[in-house]
Image (cartoon, rainbow, N blue to C red; front, top):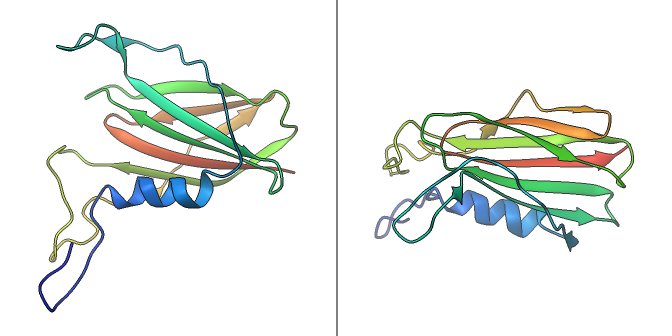
Length: 144
């Protein structure tokens, strides 16, 4: 967003596109997602969790992009890292806000912006991650 002849700031949808354009490199992963869902006007059993992933073999990284659509529940997910070797978390970013109507503005330019995530662990080749309600998460892993 911009002010005529003045300041510019990033709107909320900038960040997911930025993360995907920088870190969504390599081969798209074929993920099987099992999670609760909800019924909408146009579809039944819409999953609360939407997740995509990429593997950049050259860089030795795996990146996941996840959205939790649930309004009140944190979704705990487990992602198998079978075939990727011993991995460590190198970046974990979370975007969320108490209001879905929240935006960034000239006076509040970082009202909705990525924050450092925490709590993700890797045990026995499985990434365990809690996704906050109404959140977007980007998490990057690297082979040791």
